[in-house]
Image 1 (tube, rainbow, N blue to C red):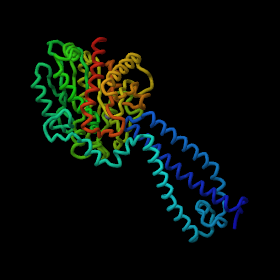
Image 2 (image 1 turned 180 degrees about the vertical axis):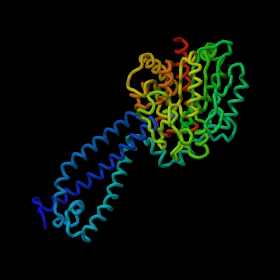
Image 3 (image 1 turned 90 degrees about the vertical axis):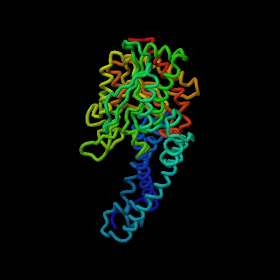
Image 4 (image 1 turned 180 degrees about the horizontal axis):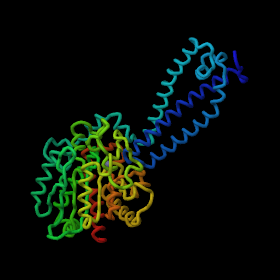
Length: 464
Ligand SMILES: [Zn+2]
C-alpha cells in the first residue's frame, strides 16, 4: 500500500486539482504572452492599453507559478490507492498495478484539459476584446468580411482613383501618365528592378532649376499589406503638383527643394497581396535551404542588422535576410540614397498602422545626437496632423516608443548622415489595421500631408 498520506484524501484531491489547474493556466498564459510578443514584433501595436494587458498576463503567470511551486510537493507525494481516480496522484505513483483505474484517470485528465482550456481561452478573448477594443480580433475572426469591407468606395471603376486602392498595374500606368502630364514638375527614373523583375519607378517632384537642390526622400509600401501607404504616396504626388502655384507653402517647397518619391517599394509583395494573400508583408525572394519565401525589408538594412527585434528564421515575418541588403529592393534604394547623400536632407518612410511618428534609434536605446530637434519636429508634425480631424499620433524614438528592432531603413539613413529621418505609422490604431476602409484614404492622406509639409518646411529652414 505504500506511504500513507497524513492529511487525508480530500486534501490530496484538492491539491491535485490545484496542480492541474495551475499547469493549464500557466501554459495558457505563457502561450498568450508569446502571442503578445510575436504580434508586437511583427507590427507596432503597442498602445498603453496593450502594455496593461501584457503586465496583467505577466502577473498572472507569476502568481500561478508560485501557487504551483507550493502545491506540487503536496500532491505528488500522495498514494494512488487512497484517492482513487485523482489524476496526478495516479500518474506519478510508483504503481505496481498499472490497471484500468490508472488508464481511466489518464484519459480523464486528457479530456479534462480541454474543458478548462476552452473556458480560459474564452475568458481571455472577452477580456482582450474589452481591453484592446477588438484590436486584431476583427482581422482574424472575420478576415474575409474585413477584406471585402475595406473596398467601401462603391465607385465602380478600374481606372486610377486617389480614393481607392489601386493595384500595381494601375499605379504603374498612373506613374507614367502623371509624370508626362506634369513634365515641368515631375521627372521619372528607374532605380532598378525588383526580385521578380518589376521596375522601381522613382519620381522627382520639384521645380526644375537646372541645379541640384536639397531633397527629401520618401518611400511607401515597404510592407506589402500596408495599402494605405501606397495610397498616400500617390496622393502626395498629385497634391504636390496640383497645389503648386496656389498653396504658398507647397510652392515654396517645390521651388527650393526636390522630393524623391518611391510610390511602391516592395512591388512584388504588393502584387502578391492582390493576387494571393492580402496579409503578405515581406518581399517575394526565395531563401536558399528553406521553402519559406521573402525577407522583411525593414530588417534588411545596415543598422545593428539582425541583432534585436528581427529573426534569422526565413519563415519568420521579421526575417532579416541572408545578409545586409540581401534584397534587391533594399539594395536599389540604399544605392540611390548613398549616391545622392549630399543633397538628401530628410528620409521619410511610410508604414501603417498605429498612428506613430518615429525617429532613430530603433536598433538601440541610445538617443541620437539630434534627439531634441528630432523630437520637437515630430511633435510639431503630429500637432499639424491632428489639427485637421483630431487624429492622435504618438512620437518618439522607435526603441522606446514601440520596441527595439534592428535593420530598419530609418536608422540606416540616419547613421549615413540623413539627419531628419522619420517613420510614419499611419491610421488606424487597430480597429481595421491593415484593412483600412477606402473611405478613410482621403482623410488619412489629407492629414498626413500636413505632417509631411511641416517636416519638409523645417528641413528647408534648417539646411545643414
Ligand atoms: Zn510596415
